[in-house]
Image 1 (cartoon, rainbow, N blue to C red):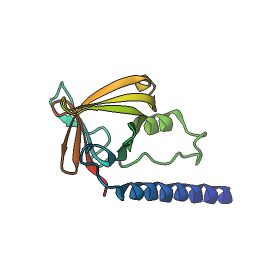
Image 2: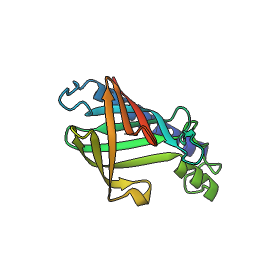
Image 3: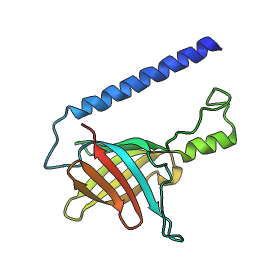
Image 4: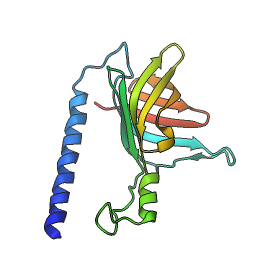
Length: 169
């Protein structure tokens, strides 16, 4: 059991190192000033206005973790997690998780991917969702207003729901 856990930990460390390397490689790419949204963006905030109370909620915590990548080829991916992250499953395996642990993990992570199109004049980006962790988002089009100021990208309507991202250098 200890050997298996050590192998899993080594595999996770390898994936993390590879992910960091890929993100850093993206930093070396020259910024496209004609398409300023192209690149890798780190998530800073996920905020939604509670219409009943008028209070801004942060469902993924005060310091969520994640990235959004917009490729020059029109492909994108969005992945983020609540911080602090949910604890590891008590069983030590993904398949042995309880319903409560699975729900907590599911609600604390968001992911989608697909194609995107930008309406620069209209200030919107349309995400054509091909796949998502959340089933009801699959095969949908999600249109979001956006604003880019320097290295900050604001996705969403600043009146009810917004995602704040900063360019990765």
